Every structure is written in C-alpha cells, then in structure tokens.
Image (cartoon, rainbow, N blue to C red; front, side, top):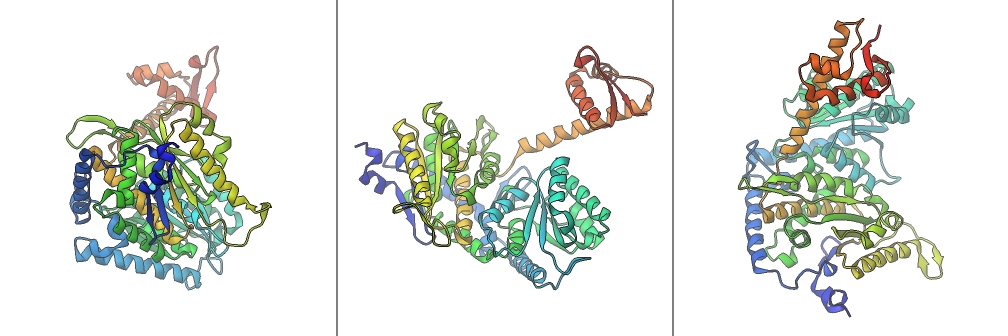
Length: 528
C-alpha cells in the first residue's frame, strides 16, 4: 500500500477541530511527516508577526496603516478603546438598522416595506457579501438580493430589469471604502437614474458603507441618505466581509451575524496555536509552501463539492492572489511571488477540467471542500441504500484518489454542515493562512501596488477617449483615422489604443465610422 494512502499516514496528517465541526486532511499532499527545522523557524517568525499584527503594528507601510480585520470578531484585541468602541457600536447599529427594516419601522417612499436589497460594489465590497448571501440563502431570507459588481452597462440593465416594478421596495447599498471607486460610482449613477425615471427619490432608498469623510460619505450626508456605515482604513477590501461590508447585507438577509463572527473568533483562537500541526491555518500555509517550493510554482485548484460554495473560489481569488501576488519581497528583492487560484464545483468538474488535472501539466494542487450534511430535509434513495449525496461524496473521493494515482497532490477540508458559524470559520481560516504564508515567503500581504497601477492606467485611457472626442467635435467636418489622430497628439505609441477607442465609440453611435479597404484605414468623424 502506498504510504500516503495508508490508515497510519492519514491519522498523522488529519486535524480535527470539534469546536467548529471542521477537519483538515493533508495526507495526499506528499508532505514530510516531520516539519523541517528550517520551516519551523520560519513559522515561529510568522507567528510572532501575526501577534504583532493583532497588537496594532503598522503592517502596510505604503499607507502607514494597521491591519485589523481580526479585531472585527473580537474587539477586545483592538489596540485602543476608541477602535474597540467603533467596532462594537457599528455592530449594534447594523443590528438596529436591520431590525427597523424588517419590522417596517423604516419604509420606502412609495411602498409599505423594503423587500429587496440591491448591493453596489466591486472586489471585496461585493465578493464577500455575494459569497455569504449565496452560501446561507434559504426560504427564511427576509429580503431578495441583487448585485451590481461591474461597470458593464448591459449587466446593469439586466439587473435593473430583473428588479423591474419592485424598485419602489428596493433598498440600495453603495459600498466603497475610498468612496471614489469608479465602477461603484458608475453603478450608483446608473441606478440613481433608474430611480429618478421611476419617480423615486434615490436618497430615500440609499445606504452608504464607506470611509469617513470620503466623497461617498459626504454625498450621503449632504443628501440625507437613510444611513451611513463606516469602513476603516485598517480593514482592507479583501478582508472586509466581517465588517459592515458583509455584516450589513447578512443582517438584512436575516442571518445570525453574531454566529458568523463567533465562528471566525474561534478559528482565530485555534490558529494562534504555536504547534504547526495543531494549527489549521499553519497547516494550510505549510501545504502551500511545500506544494509550490515556497515560490508559488503550483496553482491552487479549489473544488468545493457543494453548490452553496460555488462562489468560494471567486472570493478566494481576490483574498489570496491580491495578497500574495507581489513583485518584491520585504527586503526589496524582486521575487515575483504569488499563488494562482481557480476552481469549479464538484461534481461539475468531473465533466469540465479533471481530465487535464489528471493527465495534463502537473502545475497545481487541489483543495477539496466537502460538507457532510447533505440537506436539511429527509432525502430519497436514488439506488438501494444510496442517496444523491452519497454519489457526490463518491465523486469527490474518487477524483482525489484518481489524481493521487497520477502524482497530483490534494488536501481536503471537511465541514459537518454549512451554517453561519462554520462559514465565519472558513473565512477566518483562509485569512489566517494567507497572513502566515506571506510571512513564510517574506512578502507584504497587505498592500496592492499592482491594483493601483491598473487604476492609473485606466484613468489614462479615459483621458485619451475624452481627447479624441474633443478633437472630433472641434473639427466636425473632418474625418480622422487612428494613425492621423496619433500624429496630431504626437504620440504614435498610442495608435492601437486610439483605434480601439474609436471602434468602441462608433459601436455605440457616439461617432460616425467610414469603413475602408482595411480596418486600420477606417476614418471617423463627429456625429452631425
């Protein structure tokens, strides 16, 4: 028998967390039985860094910020009474507001109650709330949820069309930490326009979740929106799900948000253990480090065998990749670190990409997630003695065995059931693992210079579009090609971008296009 699949080896690499109904199985990761001394030293340093982080150390020197998302589920850890009070009072305000909505003490302009929630956000301001809402959705939900998480006009139209005549009973949450995120700002302007065209006052349906004194905060205060909830600079977007960002929609949904927070709090406590083999977040970080040789050489494929966890891989993509994808380490050395994340759901993956996982490039390891409890009500047998859930587990165990037979490692996280506490614990588990792994590889998990660079580049493109439109409007009788505009702007390096901007403007009827023998010779002019 292969050692890694033996009963003895399984027991060595299995960690049970009875406090949370969660277990971790790393027997198929081909990791050593004993933690190497060099890795042990790295972990002790990582534990010290985590402790300093929780005590209020400046973890984001780029912005001189602390990183305190761990305080959200245990305010007593916060380094000052002021922060402790902010967290506690915000939690009470969230609960009170949700109660006012649910008891119809706060009603919309032209309806007897709020029955829908439309959430506007992007990145962590949308992924976390979407994940929680989808994972814990039930018939008991107090409100119907809709999300706008992009600046795609057609996507906005689809969502608003789905709401339709229910707009008058729809509460809109606008979530943006900076208050100036363009995608969220655009969605807000689009949604406001729909409200106004429906004869509704947007401000009587709107709630802001944003930084104090941000553009959005000032707008909400000036227009007297229904409420304003804070986002603090010591909570990053990708770790904000247990702040007002995720807790407000969860409370409106009718979820037990204190149970979500408690699950995260208990997981935090378990992941402070200094013994790596008894610390679930350290075990995950060790497996990531082992699989990728400390350099992120292998991607992490997330395969949750539960439909409710479909969005978990999307949520983790931001948490993991934005935190760990860094060009330089803490010493300023170029390292190009990262951990790629992609995934699907089981057993859908049986018919999607498992063929490549088993027989293609061995450039990954798999994280399986299984949930033992099949459903809330009694089920049926689809074969004598066998349920649909038995097949689901069979496919998962079969897939992990088939992959291992071909030298493809995997680990499995098992939840007894999905409930608010286990979901909070799952969120905290990966937050802690990311923090510890970042320490192991010597990078800063709490800044994102690449994201900011992309935003600046996008701003340059918008400016160029305005420049093109101004040039065409200033010469209404003249036709211009992409190349001629680049010459006029004295920047031929932008010719390709100018061409693509002209094509976009023409497709939307904002300029007129004159086709030519080749697409590159096409000319454009302002609409008459």
